[in-house]
Length: 153
Image (cartoon, rainbow, N blue to C red; front, side):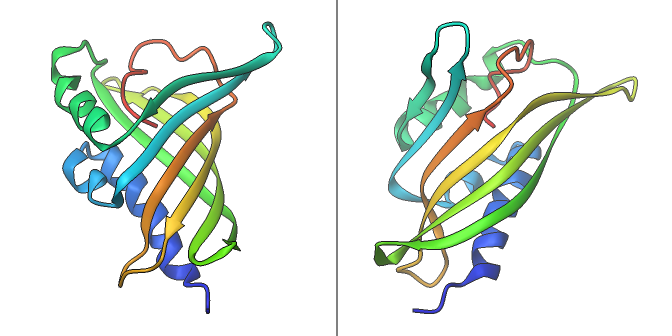
């Protein structure tokens, strides 16, 4: 099977743009029905792995619906992603992609700060016409997130 690298790149890039624009239903549509979304980090202080979120479709959809009820800083988020590796993982219908990720926040005064740095580790289903995300692990290096951290990465 030929790996559809452009389709995978488009999928990952679209996922970032949809989150930046807070188009959450369209973001969910990029996933297969039984997907997993995880946010993890390694704590050097605790010397162990931490799992901050581990959600399926229903839980992530519920989280999106609750976001308007939470305090969110005024401004915009921008995700910058660089797809580093795309490879087959065992089965012919499954690809793995690793991307570096930077999340920026710009407030209403035009000041921009880095909110977080990490990697996407994506499992991508290519059995249908368009690639779709099966699993996404957001592996963060940044652990002090401050306000706005309820917005998915």
